[in-house]
Image: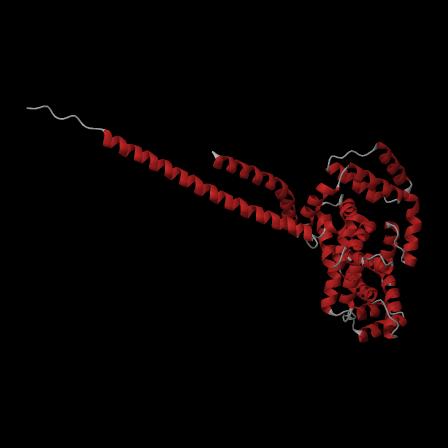
Length: 371
């Protein structure tokens, strides 16, 4: 009886420990399994990070900033999660949407001339400028002269401008086939000029650009530009960035172009502000392909953790070790319990056999009758 009580006490203790250790450890295991799937990773993290108060705050901040697309994204995310949105916020958002068209024409013109990209209309103007080659040639000349003169040029902007000119030439030849990459490169370059890239992404692109520039080709392109020979400048620009780097920057432009098409320039800038390398931009493009209407709100709530698992903290590692220790203890307890049951079964079988033998010795068969 004493052993049965100890067994029950042990079972209760193991059950309590399992209820404490298993849930957080299993959640961390799920996050680790979803590390390469930004859709699953963001869904798991939103389960804990998002509630009605966070949605209301996000919509309010978006309306205050005049960011209609971000507010719409929060509303889509709330709809997906069955979270109600205040009617007053919906009314204010509609009023903001009604007045937005008034700024479109002036923003487009300003974007074409100055390269300003504070709105989608301004970015469209800047993109038109870059597709013609005007914007990239302007930036290439500015940064190229600095580099050749040893004045500390921004090699990332220089590389993006050179790749942009090469992609622009391909865009014209392919009747617009390279336009997504062209637009993506323009957006990344604009964010770089405005210092809106994350420090890690700035450093990553800087490393990619360093050593990738061919100075003789740069000088030839600048010479063509000085003669106002735009066609020759575009051809020469194709050799400024070496082939391997050209492919990497073009892929970056394609991913950025996909994001811009799905989320607008503000959504793309959100990604560029949290991404640490070109791989994060690719993951954001995958997330945007699966959840385009909620991507901006998801990034606003989760930041880079929507795209990457990140390093396990000491606390996370402790929970995983605790789960492994719990499983080991559980296995040892199960083994011990099985051994005890087997021993108890053998003892009972032995007792039954002994009782049978004893009853056989006590039984005396009757003697046969005398003839």
